[in-house]
Image (cartoon, rainbow, N blue to C red; front, side):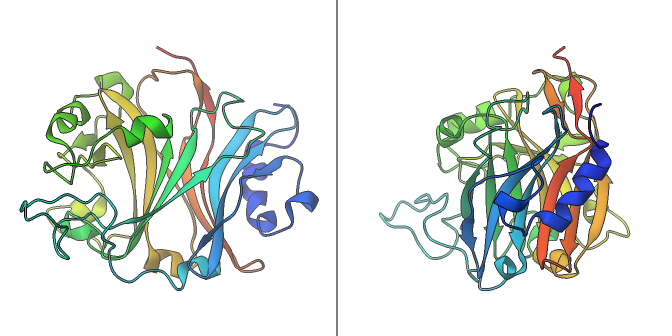
Length: 287
């Protein structure tokens, strides 16, 4: 590979993500900032000198963890379950807060990155199952267009999903395209899709379960992988982590492109900045 090694490039992002993009590393490309809490959040892509992507991620300032809504909303993934003609305060909304983050314009749809945009979701009370009923972020790196996600209708089945769309969401992904330990537990969500959960994740263990801090999820709809998702608690982020975890790999990929082999969660004390990144990108051929 031309230029600096991929691992070094990815690691360097922590030190420059808070800088002015005009003065940052030319191999570090930013999406537009959006307000989050008392801070800001944006996407980024790291490339090698030859233009090949080496990392994709989300950067957010420390202030983004402060001033967040403390209660679920009455607008997100809502459905009149009891048919009384209104949305009630309890039990009729998923209630998450979502920001939709564009990738840097110069790389969107290019460089064979399979990811097209990012859905950044804040869940002030968490969501089922119980280990995940704590305040956390869901970070969806989508591999399909926004219109395809919006077409997954809200309804009265599963987690606020239309019953017909639920059936499409639960359609099995061909075995070669998902790691065998990532399984469907019926966690299909309107305007999102199904969630394939790591059956070995420590917080779901039947014995000696550990508290939920972060985990990895594959998203699916209509028999295909549609998003990659690190899910991370606010408390874990406040601990200022610096960690990388392997991503359990499938045997094959339906679309060619650069796919990650690990995800990383880092805090930069110098810049008061967090990054959540997909790294160790490897080019895969479609099979």
